Image 1 (cartoon, rainbow, N blue to C red):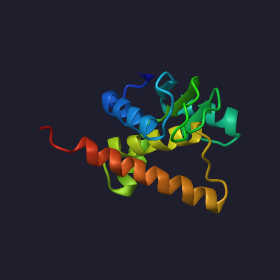
Image 2 (image 1 turned 30 degrees about the vertical axis):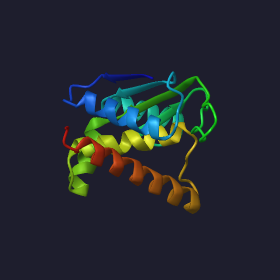
Image 3 (image 1 turned 180 degrees about the vertical axis):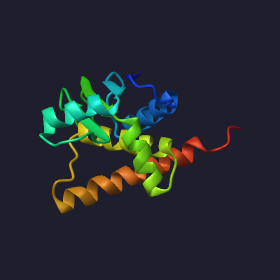
Image 4 (image 1 turned 90 degrees about the horizontal axis):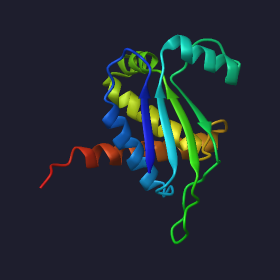
Length: 155
């Protein structure tokens, strides 16, 4: 699995933690082991440009996803499709503010946004209430199980 994390900001971000989370989510979603993913960290001006260009919305946002080959989660017993999953663009400064408002660490917000972005790349959406319930429950389960396995002591 090829996952690139490109930090184009001055923010100190635990890139290995983002990589580890992304790898975990992709494995749990049964994405082909040869799939490619890029996670790019950008500043607010760059995110604002992308947000306006692609969503026609003002100001920076926390995360945007840009699917490439429209890969979907693998199904048990079937070989997953190989290809390029796409790009996730995160804005650490927006994520940091959201983390403060939510009362948790900035890295936890970045892990949440990484998981959220991957689910979007895999075709999940939250435009409709039922879609939102499904996506956010899956996101919650993935993040909680990742954090639980990450914090498990090594034998």
